[in-house]
Length: 144
Image (cartoon, rainbow, N blue to C red; front, side, top):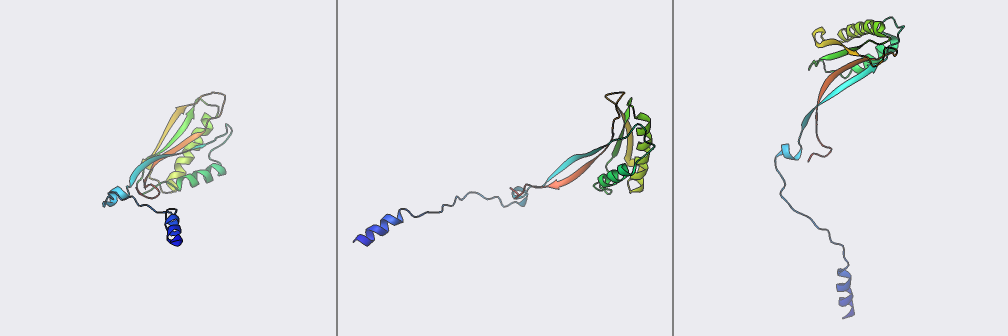
């Protein structure tokens, strides 16, 4: 019959969904791995050669940066002051103010380290570098 023949012909054009079945791990650690990652959080704060301590802008920027500091984990907060730069004296004074602000915001004094780094140029003003390590747990977007 013609109708049966047409039905068979149309069935050949039907779209079929295929499913691939494989071994699916039943351990949540495999399906949704969590990785602990360390990230160096850092900020460079410019200091003018004529500055007399921390400016209001530097204060606001540093406080915003320190919002991400995990006070319970208490990683080391490093303040690096330029040495041999045009702003060395101003940067040294500002760095002391930065350390005081960090303590006032809840960071333990024994977790703050002030060091120096060699400036690339004696004529230029170099920034103060503030950094700490943050630790975060993360997964892929959809697990495995």
